[in-house]
Amino acid sequence: MSRFDSAQSVRVMRAQDIDDGAPPIYMTFETVYPSEEAMLYAFSQPVRAELRAKLAEILPLFHGRIFHITQTLMA
Image 1 (spheres, rainbow, N blue to C red):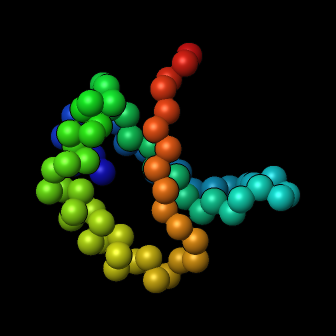
Image 2: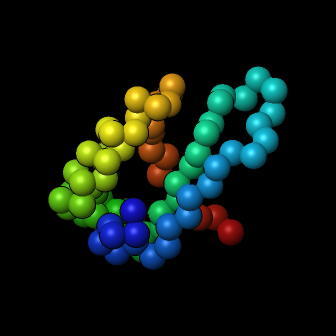
Image 3: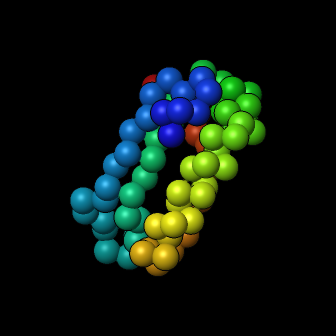
């Protein structure tokens, strides 16, 4: 993910403890971009297809789904 154009930082976090009744979340990835436009441009580049191909290889090991949440840093 650090190969994405304009990515300012990348963090990979594995769930350590989850509240009872919360959705089961195994891992989260956080990538910071200077703007939403920069993020959308990065997602349009060939490196995203490479990442998706690698994820397709390991996805059969997991149950669940992958989804994106775009957030704005407030503080």
